[in-house]
Length: 280
Image 1 (cartoon, rainbow, N blue to C red):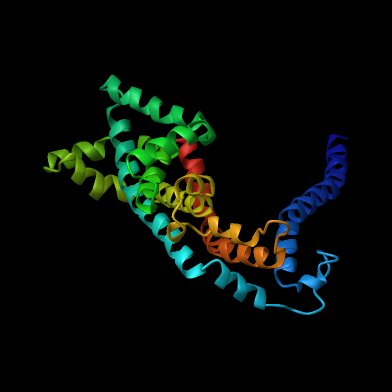
Image 2: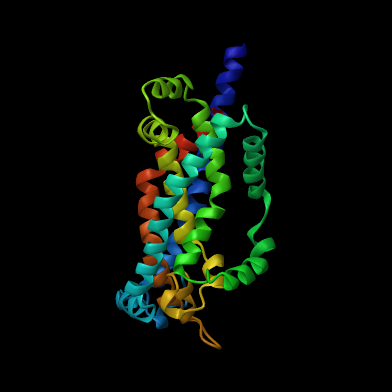
């Protein structure tokens, strides 16, 4: 009787599951479909944004490329992202290693851990105006300064991820390296850091997506038009009384393409690293 009841419930659960999956897929794909349809349409063909275009207009992508000065803005965005990734992976991982290995020995490192983690609960909007003042004072309102700020603001989340991974590495490896004459830096760089590859991949991907897509920090810090990022360049399509939606959505797709490609190829490392860091 129980088995028959379970079979009946399972038979009725399948349609519900299929409907939920279809609904989720629709919610995810519909905005992308709308963006693509608008991007390849002629302005005169905008009566129904969901309908297929009567004529294909790829010139929108060319016009968007020229209006946003795409190569220059792409270089600025890529420069900030790549430099941020390099120094984030080096400094944040070593900081997490030092904190994890010394938390039980020193209250200072324990306090530093909770100090870094507590920053995760402070919204950026709360410190935005003070940050602008300090950035202007110390001449950080440029692509070099904003890269440094990205490294700092990424430290709380990255510390959380890296400390969870370092905890799972036996301290016997550190002791063996010390017996062989290795100092802490050599121990970290040659033994610990290679073991952290899954977490490092996760931090790299999340940092890349955050830095590439960020709009708020460049908006408040980068006043020089030649140093602006791709996200700020989208303002060029907004006129006083209208918006060039076809060109704007074509530009949005150009900006979205790199981070979407990275995410599609690297999503398994994102999930594996986050779960490993949370559990361990």
